[in-house]
Length: 311
Image 1 (cartoon, rainbow, N blue to C red):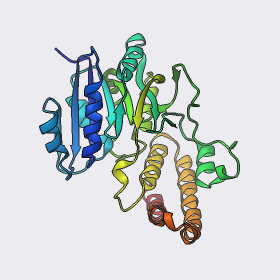
Image 2 (image 1 turned 30 degrees about the vertical axis):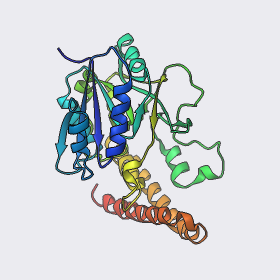
Image 3 (image 1 turned 30 degrees about the horizontal axis):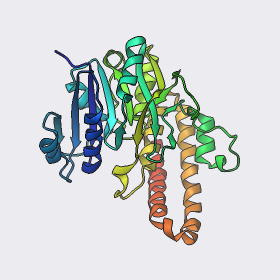
């Protein structure tokens, strides 16, 4: 008999967080028949050993290297047995009734292809979890730092924290998203060309284009720490975020729009490379972060120059 829901968690060197996540799932009492699939992306911190020892019922897929977030999720989805697949980050904590509250709307409305929930930080503050697609206005405001001049300028729109009822949106955070397999059959899986960051936006774009709804359900709440896998990296997530953004525009919009976004992100990178050295001089405690951002923006600039000649 197939389970009602398959929970897929991609892990990369977050053994302690993964253990906490799995314990939170185990502690939530539910009548739903479920399975848990862990896709380990070549961790070297003992994550796989911990899963086998502490959670022997969990299905474990072990990769020899880090294949990226989207590709690893594709592995988990393809091996899952349920019609509903919950993609969950390893740095999340599942709260009581959250999974139940996500399943109910999917059963009530068969036209929903993807459902996201409210994400909160450990201190209870809200994280953006449902967004609209970026456009040229938001790229200009964000990459050229114009939002620092006025809060009224348009940035990537997100749901206000006071939203209390289910709404439709363009895309939801991949930290916790419930997907209907029928939607994936019509729209396809995650695009493996996006290694990490932006892959859920691109997938939701195709799912909506195929006629399915993408919804945000605020009654279901998950704690999300965010960014834990990147603390020891040689560059910040900024590089991958810009790479995912450019791929999204290149794949789904005109070549002129892509070139414009490429130009704007390049100007934004140069602007930051001019500003960050001054921040480095006066913000001693932030110097490691500043150096990572400088490196990332330099790589963005080099990458954009190369991509212009490869179109």
